[in-house]
Length: 76
Image (cartoon, rainbow, N blue to C red; front, side, top):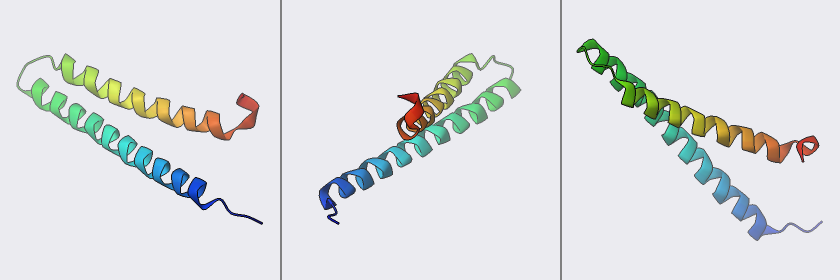
């Protein structure tokens, strides 16, 4: 058995980077929801913060669905 260490390293780096990006984007979504709540308590609409949170959560969902697409061979 021959292990391709460079390919394994590439998978490690890419998966680590994508994981960090997804966590950061999700955290930004949670922060935007918190900002919306704060803005709504002061009497404003907060539509921009809601749009930002929705965009962040949609991006996270897209990354997760793409990962599932890559893993499950019946989807190809």
